[in-house]
Length: 325
Image 1 (tube, rainbow, N blue to C red):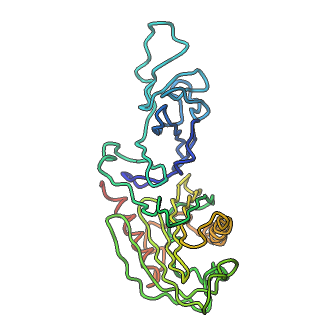
Image 2 (image 1 turned 60 degrees about the vertical axis):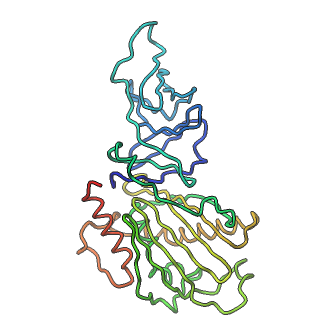
Image 3 (image 1 turned 90 degrees about the horizontal axis):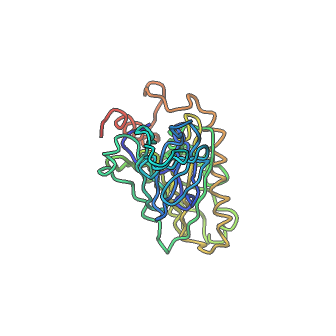
């Protein structure tokens, strides 16, 4: 876990009137909205008898335990014990740990680390959300990988001709030009011209000439975001992905797909199918990597010029692990 960062963990629209269970770094957390719609995040364990709070319900501004009806407000404080007689006090230890939580750019964000730091640490921007010129869809993909492996895969230009041959990778043109990397405090990106195959399916309808090199930009933002932007001859395609670390070997990649072409709802099915196809092509390769998490030592891997963005990812991860931001 990288402490003192905001993690994108769920789509905002997925949190409704009932409690939602989230597992993050093998830690069960319950999310709920109060009567005003404000989000709260608490540990999923009731301090009374250890019941799962996510199995309870929301009443007004409180989360109600399913076992004995104890009610906890958004600050995690027990405010009612139904079994108590009038005038009985509530134990001071009847408190559930809470986590800073926000909504921004269509995602729910949780902060891990020193909660006092949450007010000064910025949440990454996903500027395309709300852009009415782009058609957007979203979805998720569950796989048995460590989230760092999933992120690393998303930054890898050189695997496309081999893993994604027939989709967009061109095995006859596997070379990757020298990467020019730009950085911000906790992220980096690179842009290259990739020689892709001719498009298939409905995308072929938009092609009027022989394929030319495609401008492709990819990058990451710590702790768990990657993005891919492809400037196609007929439009722009951008995919932002939050790689949610369920446990050491399980990740749910929650993706947002934005496109400037085929902007009608009729094309959403094809866009979803294409996005999931890429994940499925990556699945057997990434799930088979060992060790399952990225090695902590650089000596355990071999790097070449095409790996420059992954090297930058490791450098920033290591700096975050060793720095109290």
